[in-house]
Length: 232
Image (cartoon, rainbow, N blue to C red):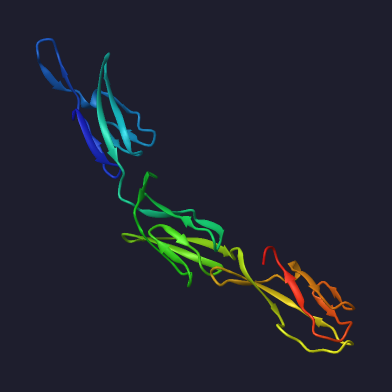
């Protein structure tokens, strides 16, 4: 006895055994019973069961050649730690990532919980558990649950380029000079990055040359320097 019990992993349960003879006489045999349990993380000290893993387990009592069993339903104990998953993540500003949280008790039982998420990306958005990046950089996702807090780190890189800007936009020089050009890409979140070395540069000066991003004039006139990056 008891015939069944429900307790948390933080609690313990004592059991007793009563023997009955053919005439209905009963007597306490608790101290003479060989007690055991099938909880993989639990322990049985004499007749006292200390739960470990959450679940339904069987307490077995053996007295001489007699066997009796009792069922115990073990619930998770009090949460002692909070974990956010994934703990680290790398994504572009065009992507998003969903986070989940679990808590753990002293016996390493874990279960999912609903938490309040926040982020410190100045251009990012947190909708429930889903983070939509904004600004490229390394940011922190914070989860708050009860008295616990956990953090995850996200590394955000720029998204796909939606516009290209070349500089200088206009220049005046002699045929003896040369001019270097640079290219900057911008994604849909306003992140910018240098793509000078990735641009296909060209010019329409019949006597000029373009070496990488360097224009060497040839013929006097007004000419166009063109930079092509992917489809931009």
